Image (cartoon, rainbow, N blue to C red; front, side, top):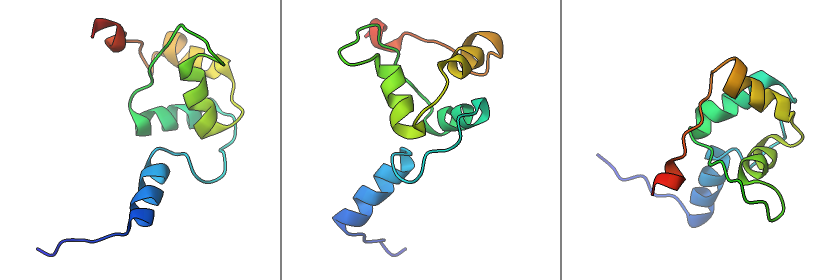
Amino acid sequence: MDVLKITPQEARRTAVAAQRLAGPYPADTKDNLLDLMQQIRCLQLDPIRAVERTQYLVLWSRLGQYSRDHLHQLLYEDRHLFEYWAHAAS
């Protein structure tokens, strides 16, 4: 099997795109928020706010303007997402 070689710039572009940090922001819909969560798989909840809570900054950096109500609905009403305090257990 041949080894695939890429440049550092290609590796950087791939990593940034995989984390959904490149390209235009999607529309502010609950489905787009859920799609992002299915791709990034984990979002750390953080009660400490220097600028804003971590979970909101992560979503904003990938979705642009979005409704926090959609996150709340996906977590607590639709139960498509769940809250787990893994960082607190470490």
